Length: 243
Image (cartoon, rainbow, N blue to C red):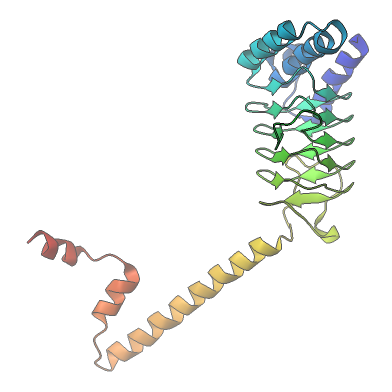
């Protein structure tokens, strides 16, 4: 057990450049505290059947850290929760070795039935801030889930998924090494690209319309009302409304 705790401390140094000393990690990192408490509650839940006590200690841990981990959840070695506030890990969740979760992550269920209801994470999985992994699905080894993504289907090993619902990015978008939020700066999200394209097109159209109106006004036409409608606001109309 002490070897596992030492590995947890070392994993903080490996993944958080803000960590300066072992004493700081032990005293100031809620993710480390939550993992330590979970070791105790998990033992009480499975080995002693003192399940009320396990839940009560887990509840106290949530009050202390802002991280809710059900005592029944299974967590592998070198698990790291950065920041941690708002993290929720359900009863039947299974987490492999070397996984990383950021604040606001939910490993939740989609059913009230008994049995497997929560996700299974493979080894080396990174879940970005605010992501929701829902249902008894499997996230493959080395997969990365972008911040605020909502995942309700299996993600293959090594894939990077972003969006609502989550979509797997192309191979060309992946970056080597550890990425804190599971996405790259040059992500090739087709929906995001389409939205950016529409916004750019609307700006070009607006500029062309304004140019046409300027030329027509020089020729003597009056398009004041059209400009008011386009702008959506006219202080003179406020005065008329008050009168």
